[in-house]
Length: 149
Length: 479
Image 1 (cartoon, rainbow over the protein chains, first blue to last red):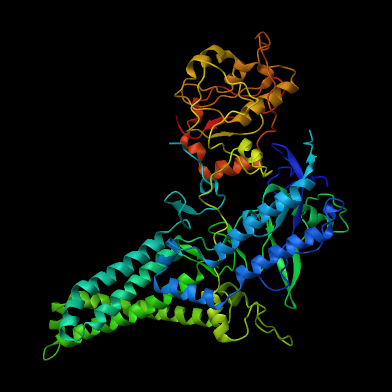
Image 2 (image 1 turned 45 degrees about the vertical axis):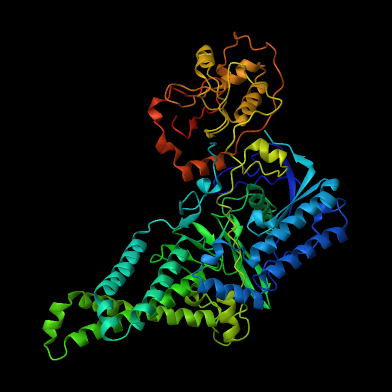
C-alpha cells in the first residue's frame, strides 16, 4: 500500500511524515445494526499473505462481542443509570461505569492479541478507543513508507 | 515537578477546559452564567424570604422538596455543562489520507487524480434496512457516524448530536443528554413549586388586607413570582418536548430536519427506535454511557517515547513532555539539560542552528535552561546530512539556541559556517523527519502560542542560501 498523495484541504500533502511511517490498514465500522460499535469483518486486501483470514476474523468478532456487551442495555445498566441519577451523578466519582469496564477488557484483549498473534507477524493492532471507536487501525510494521522528497 | 503537556492543550476544537482538562465547556458561556445566576438567585430569594414563612404557616414539605430539587437542578446542570457531550476525535493524518483515497477511488471518472473540485462526499450505509447517507466532515476528516453532527460553535463532531444549548453552555449529545433531560425536568418541577410557594406566601399575607400591603411586606415574592411565571412556559414546554423525543428515540436535530417523518407516499420510521415508548425512554436515559473518547488528560507523548511504545503514531505526538535524549544522541558535557519545562514548537523544516552564536550558547545553556526536543536534533541531522555537513556533539548542543528573549532562533542550514570544525568526534544521530506542518499549525491555533511571544524581538531570519523557508521556533513557555 503506498500512501496517497492527494492534497488535503489545508494543502498539506497527506504523506508528510515524521518518524518511521508504516503502511496501515483500517477496519471500518459496520452500521448495519444501528449505531452500536461494531466493526466490519470483511478481510481487508492489505492484509493478504500477512495473516490468516480466520485469525483476523476471530479478533474482529471477539472485539465485536466485547463492544456488544458494552453497548447492551441490560437490567444492570438500567439500575446503574437510575442509581447515578439519584446520587445526582456523584456516583461516577467513585465507580467505573459498565462501559468503562468493557473497554478495559477490550484494551486487555488488544494487548494480548498483539503479543500472541499480530506482532510476530509484523502487524500491530491499535485500540479502537484511541481512534474514537471509528476504526481499528492495523499497522504493517514491515512496510515502512519512504518519505518522498 | 515535570510540566507535562496534556491532550486538552492541543485540542483542535474551540472548547474551553478547566481544572487541567477535567472539565470542558463550549466557548462563549455568557448565557450559561446568566442561567446559573438566574436559577441560584431566584432560589436563594425563595429560600431566604419565602421558605421560613411557608414552613411556619403552611407546611415544611414545600421547602424540603424545593431544596432537594434545587440540588438536583444544580448538579445536573453542572454535569451537563462540564461533560464531554460525545465529541468524536478527529481523524489522524493516516486515517484522513486513507479516507481521501477511498473517496477518489470511488469516483470512476477521476481515476484517482486530484481535481480542483472535490467530489461529492457522502457514503451510504444501510441501518436496519434504512439507507442513511453519511456526510464527510471536512473539519474532522471523517465520515460522520449516523446521528452525529458537526457543531459549528464548538467546531467538533458530536455523537448523537441533539443541539448546542447556550443555556447550559455546551453541546447536548450522546454523553450528556440524560443529564440535560434530568436538568430540564427537575428545573420545571422546581419552577412550579417555587411559583406555588411564592404565590401562597403572598396569598396568606394578603388575607384580610389589601394586596398592596402584602406586596410591600414581601417584595421579593413578587420578583420570584414574575421570574418563575415567565420562565416556566419555556422550560415546561422544553421538558415536554424532550420527553416526546426520548420516548421516540430521536434527537432535536433529527426532529427539526424531519429525518424520520413519513414523506408523501413513502412511510418512514426511525431505525434507531427500540420498539416501544418505554423501551426508548429507558434506552435514551439509562443505556450504557460510553466514556469520553478524547483522553483529555492523556499526556502528549514525545516522538521517541511513542516509538518505543511502538504505537507508530509519531505524527500525532508533537510535543515532548519529558525532555529526553535519544540514546544514540551525544549529550554535550557542558550542558545538563533540565528536562522538564519546555515544549518547543517548530514551524516547518528548518534547522535551528545559529552559527554566529556558537560560543555564547555553549555558555548560556546552563542547567536552568530547558532541554531540547530531540526531534530538533534529528531535524538538524536531516537537513545537514543533506547538505553534506557533519556534526559533532557540540554542534548538537547548539541546536539548543536561545537568545536573550528566550526565543529559539533558526537559521538556514546553508548558512552554517563552513569554517567551523564540526567533525570532532561526530556520532551518528537518529534521523526523524520534520514535524508535520499541519499539526504544528493546529498546535499554534489551539494553544495560542504566538500570543506569548514577542515576534519583533526575533533576529532577521529571512531565508538565505538554499531557499528553503526559515521558520521560527518558539518556546511555548516564555522563559
